Image 1 (cartoon, each protein chain N blue to C red):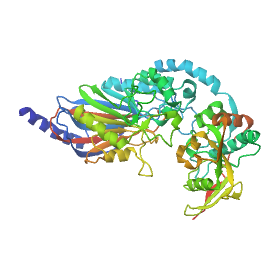
Image 2 (cartoon, rainbow over the protein chains, first blue to last red):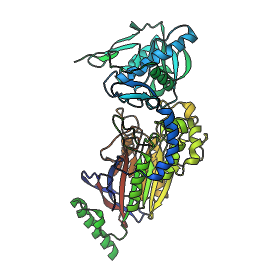
Image 3 (cartoon, chains in turn yellow, blue):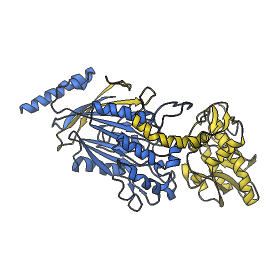
Length: 256
Length: 302
């Protein structure tokens, strides 16, 4: 008896003529079939793989399952447009946790935070937040860097953000008009001045041109805080009992 | 002459059977062969099923279950190629703790034949990738990453021809543009070459010199982009010829079924991708016969 462990998807037939230039081969392609097999819980796990994984798993689990905080509801980066609760949480965490470090080194604070939507690597599940959660959201080894941007570079940043993707921001307020054009862009409630410079905390990945954020590549000055974003999140979760971020009006688009 | 008549007749019978929707196994072809391609992409270190509290993929996936599925298919048809389209690394603490060793060891145990390199496979830098190569008992195929001046020199191949039941299957790998996506200090002196030009060189080599019956592109370019200027699997399929199947990755695209694209010579190319995280396994079955005709019909039952 063969276990029926996959769903055979047979949707439609396509009859097509393929002109082949293959003269040497004795074989010719006659038919192609395709199925997608879901790897679902009904499938019995191969015991040799389970046994192989077991020592690795217990070692990782011990470290990862310590509870740091709680969250009352599940959040994903696709929950809403322009800004998301999970993205706001990340940007605000960087603002709160990294600014004291920056200030201790420079004597002043940075103005805002910019991360990238694609860098939110996992959703946040309702219930306990553990060390594992921080690894899921931020599996990469990226660190916080603070760049000093000119007014011109700030404007490049706003025109990048005008595209409307919900990149995590903090300390920045953006409004698009009903056609999706930039209507207002503020940093700490102020409009950007050409002859002023601004300090933006971001990740070393984005600063080096990741996600095509080229306006970060040649800042006026740069300071690496040697603080991994994942460790920052772990510290942030430890500091808070409950993580309940909300979508707010930091990035909005006018209604039709 | 008589034999040729016979083949012609059975090919005609095949038309009826194909349209009628009956199984190929009823066809009385002498040299009928079946090659099964199994594939994953963007597994991202999900060696275990997703946790039970995951909002989207609770309890799905896992290498141990994937092997059970592969075992069952191998019992049915031993002529299997098992392929991965890159981003094997990064996404669970297993990567942070063990640097990819576990992923490569598991893929070897599962019997993978080949994989291509995804952008996240550079996440511990090219040195981190090279360090795990002793654990990979499968080929790393990359035709458009020139790694001559890196530690990976000699550890990858542009393509490989796999022979299963006398069927020659040519597989080549294509990677995504790294600048803007990966820090240069991670990929170092890896040179990205134009995927479309390289794909044409590859299909020429695989068809004309290696006399392949099936040509597969293992791609980490991404399925499709809003900006059509960005090279994707769909525009690669359109802009080239000689490829039968593109197994894609990078965009974590869940396709209900493979997309059929017409290539620049009007022939059909299948483009497939199975999401990410190992929650699905793609399966493409190629049925071949011993015909010597140069013009022929192919039925896509997808």
